[in-house]
Length: 213
Image (cartoon, rainbow, N blue to C red; front, side, top):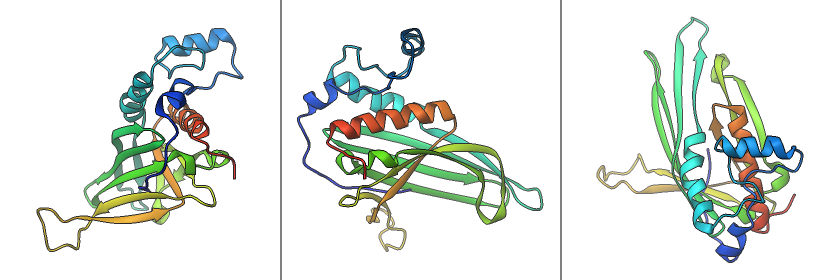
């Protein structure tokens, strides 16, 4: 996982009022309308306010961005991992969220927490991809896979994320460690929902001035 950063934003209202959170350019009007009725993100033709757009990221994004994966070791032990996203905020052209990965099995336990900041202007829109991991680490076989929405920063940009400073002597407020990276992945259990998130992020990045490359 990866990210945190700040940048100059374009006027919020202008960007968000134009934001096509779900692209329907290659779809029939009937299919687009059915997806809106089913709760899909607003289409480009739908009237919406900046508040409604921010609410989509705050409410729908974490609802869609979760997954449970299952890996099996060579001796048949099942390892389940829970991927969750929460605290999503879209402020101007900066997207922030918290990500947790919780592994819980008889032999393997672990928990990681990361707070991400993605300057949407720094996203390489040509690099937004959907990947699918069918194999876990260390030769494990993944029997319950998930999709990853992969983001790549442009040549001049970067993403950041912070993690708790587990080496700190202060156990009450240990502080954080900041990491700067050029790729980030969001794990989503359903591939269709992963594509909705990828489309929304791509459209938002373009409106914030992001380019391909």
